[in-house]
Length: 402
Image (cartoon, one colour):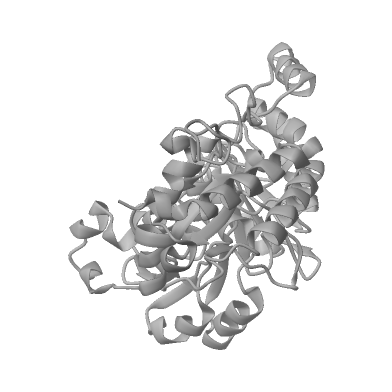
């Protein structure tokens, strides 16, 4: 094998599959639609929580097949408001997965309740087989995450929640456009929450929304998010203990422009991911995130892969270094299960050191990898480059070992 050859790994001096001139799609995306929308709000002098917010709430709820949408300033706020609307607080427990952004669990702590962690399964989502054993007399809700856009086993979790008289709250912050048996995520349980932070598939830099089919719950969330006001009452009339979590007209205008292209982008990501799933699943030792035939439209916030070191022939860290050198934009995922984050060491009434959950620890420390959603907006030939890179690393895996 000659030095600098195409068959030699770039990490070891070979020629990379993708040259530096070949870029991946930038995120966020925008065009004249976003520019016009922002300028229209600016020139209207109506920047505050008005018609554009109401229109976006209506349109996004319809896009997800929900009856009601209550916007707010972040996905984190959306979780807190949903928990507050259920009067969840001190002494209560909420079951959450350990492989997710910290807000899924920290929002539970912010309202005074205790997050109880249940391991994920091979889907990267909460394992329904383990949920029942985690329920106690203090459990008030189950809050799974549709991780990476892969819808969790809603049927099983909904059945468990119903049997125990507790709420099912979807952390749907990765699943804009996803459908389970024909219905969008967000109102498959009592409610679902979404984020519009900059990394998300539809973004205004920040923002969030709560979706539900329950009118009473929707009104209560609206009140909490809007300083405790209620519909039809005078402006300075406050019925509930609320906060100011309102969305601005600027955010809503941006999001409406983003929403206009979301369906086409969702389909494009799904098509490119299907190509990767088909090709990469043929490479021994690499495991794409599995789907389910009940997922009738798959959102991809992340394209998730697991590596089996023994079967593939090198470690995750060696694979990542080699892939990045070849031009593949992939990284390891969360570095720690949530229960090992420093914030949980401060909690005195619950011993988070007791948790040793095998699947999440394998994902964090050994096998988990992902690519961000904008990669899946590239061309089919770019997906072929990813396949070529992985095949090249597989062929040369032995050369990566010391």
